[in-house]
Image 1 (tube, helix red, strand yellow):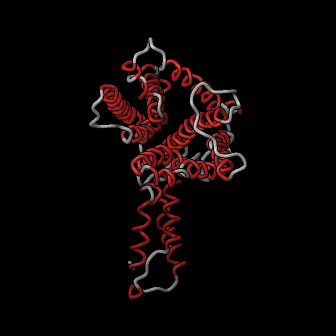
Image 2 (cartoon, rainbow, N blue to C red):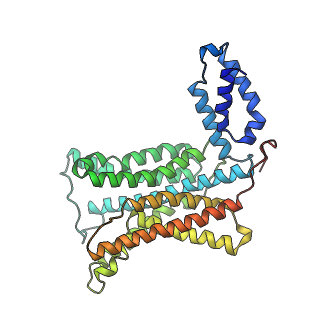
Image 3 (tube, rainbow, N blue to C red):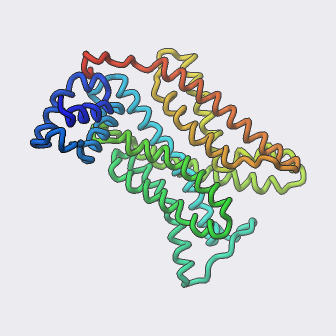
Length: 356
């Protein structure tokens, strides 16, 4: 066996064992024919384009579409659900940002709450501020494209949404480095997982998903409802009957990681309940997807913790944040165990891929 063949076989170990058992010899011969007449003295290596193509094939094989083995198809469906749920959450939150942007410009009339000063009319800052406000709709557009069966359009829209959400970090960095690091970490962990799942799960072999138009507007409706509830909560927090100590238990659930924690815990409890009470509807897909999503949500809450605070209100808020992390960890572990137990068995290396 030549040195180049050994290296090609080493690269092909990225592929699942069942896939290698069926296709490895054919792929090695194809690679060797394309490499030409090279000897070990030339110290030949696989080209980067070949390595990347094998890596992409490995993702498609492990996160399979229709016609692949049941296990790889289930993993693929779980990753695709991660992308769908993650984009839905960010679409809801971005619509809230867009709602506040409209409120700043007085679209809903004078606001009782203090608003940040607007840039001067007809200035470059005003134009940039308006453009930033409308970029929040990129998440809505990405989710709508995905639900309507257009993942190729959803991918660049999601990347643009991440870039737009991070565009103010350089300005923030110059003003407050610690806050910039916190926001960058929070944005990174909450944005990266669903966007990576979008690119990994919706490959060319993934099944087409086309949901009714009403599904595409659900995050918008949820964002409008949540905006109204948060506005009421902000008004109630200033009323004398509700003490500051009481609100210190509520506020940690109303920021970005708090809302994500609440949504994930409710969805996780529902998934666990279905698994335990309705055996006929058990599926590894929602359990695995929610367990994956719990990781960035826990990290998002972790970077917001204020340890070592002295005042009672901050101590309560920190305690609630720690309790959220503990609840998410317990929920994620439970979901992971249930998901792995109900996952279809892996095919034997000599069996080759089976059909769904």
